[in-house]
Length: 220
Image 1 (cartoon, one colour):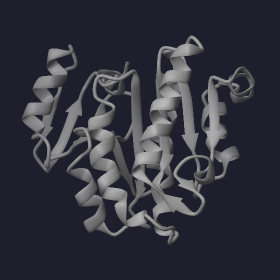
Image 2 (tube, one colour; image 1 turned 90 degrees about the vertical axis):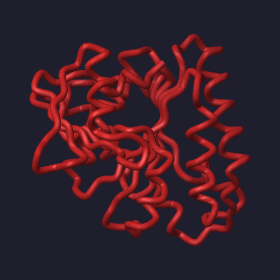
Image 3 (cartoon, helix red, strand yellow; image 1 turned 120 degrees about the horizontal axis):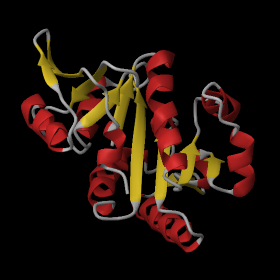
């Protein structure tokens, strides 16, 4: 999955349910911070009445930074990062979790590290890599930092759902038109029992009058 957002509100409204879903599904949940302080991300859970300290203490929730994940010895290597993803999937399952749910802030790629020009290669490979694995990954792109052309290029490899802008009915989704049309996405949702309508004034949007757990469609 990929998520491009413009505002703090959008970030909160997508990241919070994503983290909660992973915790509720008994998955190992990893958040990789960059421009948001760890305490801010943990506060998202607190606003929903969830005590993040309990999950941190148990090891189900982990907050990591770019030097523990994407960047090793001032270098980004897609091979190294994919190996880390596989390692974390294996470790999560071995420790009794249902799988891995992870999300990372991709602004590290704008900091000039060697290998950052391989970001799109990584997105392409990650999308293929996690197919049929016990994992769900969400890459976050802040539109205020990234060039729109790079986001468009990355979008070609993302799953259809880019953003769930609110969690209470009615729910609105944005479809990735480079991978699927709104009609096809609506059919997929309806096959899962989630009613969806197109939005005349927003050709890439869907309206879900009764809401629905859209993230779980791709989850383990």
